[in-house]
Image: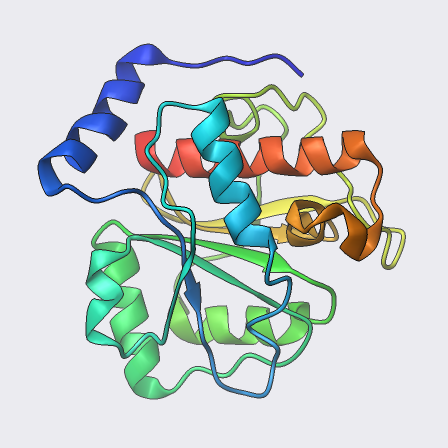
Length: 218
């Protein structure tokens, strides 16, 4: 995989951060329904550190954890959701999250195995008029910084199905990116947690950089 940085777009990333005085971070969604929204606790800090070393994005060293109804939501346009179990949004959360995404926020949902059924149900409530569509391997999210000619890397086998990157769009803008049968978060975790080989962990981290870079430059 080769690095393909776009230096013009890098200015678009850095300048707003300098103006606001804030570092880029990832907001993990604390959702209801009983699912383990807190799973893979070392994953996002490791990804943020990797972003700092591989790009010119000034990233914080820790994630933010929040509920969709928290007043701080609108300060964190990059949202992340994961887990193994059930997701359940309230009507108020659906309205608020839909509005935020339509206004320009980005949501990455990473299935940690067992999330798929409830995720698709909640997305049908969130955007009943929009389909969850598979992204082809030539989509820019797979090539915007590191090059993934075959799409998402496979971290864990689960049901022995190929990994899929799916999305929900507002016009041409990708609002929701769903990584399924892939388990990027496990690949971002500390090495001793899952004992994944180095090349797999590196591929997962590189794909994480692509998702962040794409969300900030699309």
